[in-house]
Image (cartoon, rainbow, N blue to C red):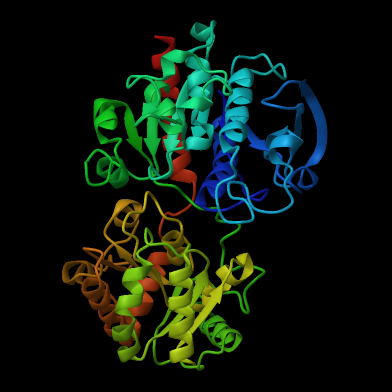
Length: 486
């Protein structure tokens, strides 16, 4: 089976979040299952230089305001990548893939990701590059318009099967209805049964309307988004397609995230050599200016600093964390009031709380290894990868009972502790008191070192790789293609 991934980011070429990890790891995990994958990605600055054996595939004149080309290359680990190299759309030395240097959306994002989707549709129809997939796998709103171009194509009967994965329903790709003509879309899209959404165009809605199948990144999130509370205005449309919606939990790259071989760590360790983890804790405490202590748990937080992640709730719960004597290490960037709040907490509690504003991939690995537990107090979380990294590194997660967090962490309640299956702590609802109680429960659990270490070993044995997820995706691909063929 041949599959085209259309995605706005892909690790290790460009990454702003977990979507990049999925786009980079899943195609490689599918290869042993007989799936030939290629990943279509914009050529942001520096991306082309990271590929090996780059060759031009096709010229793309008149591409939404300028000329571009499609090139192909491979990453060091063998991932086949098709790069949409369009300088007028993607060659911007400041800012990021979605946001300009002022922190707001690029004003031409509709053209940038309209172009990505249009080229995805042309490849899918076999018109560019001489290769046609059996299925096109779209990722989030930035790729979802591909479904509209395929739906309205005069040869749409020959289009491959299509699957849209919703990584986060909160991001819907909303643009003025007046952008329709520039996007080469017919007037029919401006309808409630098209991609009209409150007098705007929604790229995501195009995928939800016209893809053959939909998926999300955990079974619980797939159920949550069918409700008015979590459906972000899409719940009615999603309920109408509930029989064509599947939740599959993401995995992580077990080679990149491996405490035995991780080059960023002070000392390698494993479930058989768990004592060596303490060397990473001490090294992290020294690096961040925390008191070097082994008698209290060190909570780690690696996250975008947003209200979605529940970090305003964590700020409100901090006095009770501080009262336990536990430590906190924060790494992230985001909303100014949250950055200021965690900076102020670190200043008020030197040696107990440390805050690093920014993103540092190597430091994120050291926090996963050095922390005793990782905090993920999200208000909603489609899948979450941080808790999977925590399990892999024996840093027992403290998570809200939502989405993929609920699907991947077993709460240390009395029954789970007696049965010997607990791998972390869950709490609900996402409010300061329940979170504080979860933190206090964790501190008490940590004090029973034999029980804590047994749980660490269980966590490190959890199935968090891509093996199971890849098999489920391969089965879903086969189902969708078979249905498309009738």
